[in-house]
Every structure is written in C-alpha cells, then in structure tokens.
Image (cartoon, rainbow, N blue to C red):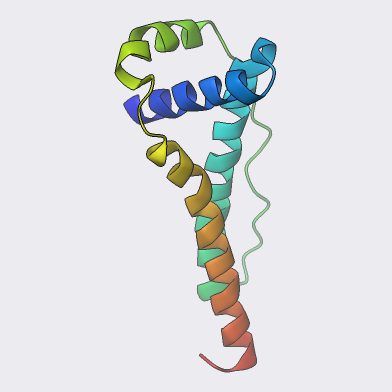
Length: 116
C-alpha cells in the first residue's frame, strides 16, 4: 500500500508541476489505474500468447472508482519523506509494463516467423 501512496504522491506533484493542479489528484489516480490495467493486460497477453486455449475471455466487468479525500492525508503525511527524492520507482512503474508488452509482441512475432 505504501508503494501506491508513493506513486500517487510522485504523480500528483508531477501533474501540479507540468499540468493543471486543479485536477492533479484525478490525473494521478487515472494514470496509476491505467498502468495497473496495462500490467493486467501484460499478464493476460502472456498467458494467451504462449499458452493458447480455446476459451474465450471477455475481460473484467465495468468497474468504478470512488475517490474520497484520502489523497490529502497521503500528501500531508509523506511530504517530508518523499518530496525532493528521486523519481526512479515512479518512472519504472510507468515504463516497465510497456517494455514487457512490446517484448512479448516481439517474441510472438519471432514465433510466428518460425525463428523460435
């Protein structure tokens, strides 16, 4: 849970610095949700690329996210600890799922060409 709070803190202040501070909490949360869904997509694509099955998967149902003012507590409690620190964890969390996804596509392409 602390890792998600760290990510929210870093993405929130990134949005405040380069974007619109009015909707920074929503942008940070949407970005974290987008990356988590992409990680979920990586896991599913790995399974369906490398372990073919005849089952049809329709994906998760409609999900809703309710935001309460918990973000204010996260920002206040962790400002001294995380403000001014390196952003390596937040950047890797955002970049790693895309690298894995394109690596999976490359491996599948090699499999289709008969090179693997």
